[in-house]
Image 1 (cartoon, rainbow, N blue to C red):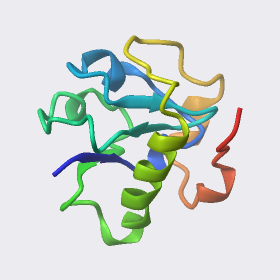
Image 2 (image 1 turned 135 degrees about the vertical axis):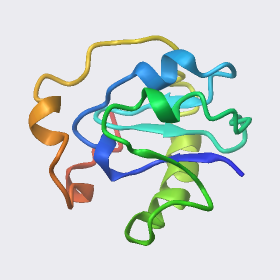
Image 3 (image 1 turned 90 degrees about the vertical axis):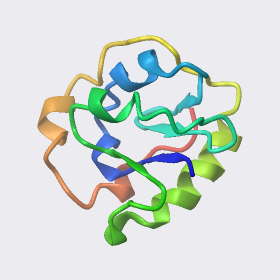
Image 4 (image 1 turned 120 degrees about the vertical axis):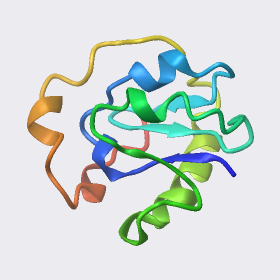
Length: 111
């Protein structure tokens, strides 16, 4: 089992979760973070650090976000050199985006 970052992270990109990860499993995209399932050790440290409640164990991802399991795996591979392991500033309008839904079309996959 690995943890999965889901839709609430899009356009927010809070990094508290990445800073507590003991194995550097987080990868950074332009406006989203993912967890590399091959690196994740299922420690649960990141879950409580996410202010938008975007992180779930892969077997507990809400049905509406199940596609994020494959998305995390695919983007972790694409962003393999984009390891993030420290706190950075969230995106400028993160607080405005935090509660919005249906944001998948806002996901930017390339730098």
